[in-house]
Length: 210
Image (cartoon, rainbow, N blue to C red; front, side, top):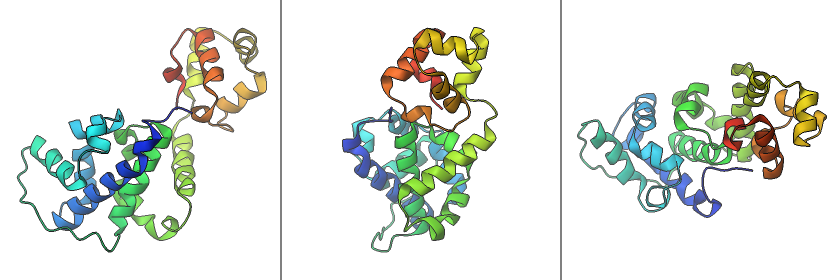
């Protein structure tokens, strides 16, 4: 499985994102979806997506919140931050952080699946459940919005049938069918299988990731 960055940074990164969103919404009083768009278009977002340790583990959520605002020229004074009571916004940032890491999905793309306000509203249903339930929900939405997997698109552009691709790659036909029908998540496939498919199709492994 290909994740956004090394797992050793995951819990710290999730907490940083959680504090950043909680602080921006509840301390700085910025509307959640507005701030999410600011973040998704910022250099902070890009550094998070590539797993830069200085951002996912080296800075606080409060520092990053102000870095995002500084980039767009929005001046906000530092505010007191109370994190004893975990807010729905804190949970939303924490959950988004896991999904981005697990699926190696861009924050802008996550925002296209659900708005930040929609994710906050999921708090009551999902905050006491295993985080996989939240991820499965987002993946279901993603599958409904995407008519065709990247594997199927690239295979068809290459002019291969599923059977031909199975022969050229050594990946079983049924497995290819399951990836294309989203019965299996290609993002969680063994690296060797994805590499074999990529070589057969003349593309990079990353091109096949959903």
